[in-house]
Image (cartoon, rainbow, N blue to C red):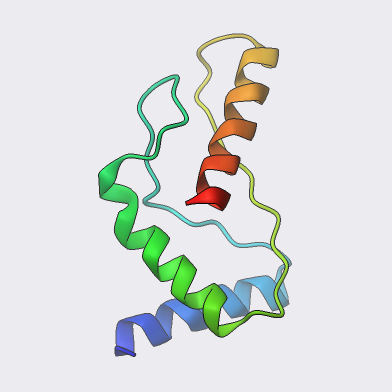
Length: 88
């Protein structure tokens, strides 16, 4: 495990234990879509490695959208994006 991966794991654990949540960046989607873009692979791999080392954690994944579209549309898109990350 590289030092960078160690720091990433520490960052995740600190925020989860101290704040109850953590924001993960560098997960990208095309506008109005829930398909994960290829440039998200590094972040998703690090998260997967972290979860393999911390199998006792249960996480709640949420997705975000921009302000385009109505409330119902963006709620659906947010849910679909979160599901795409969980199923990756």
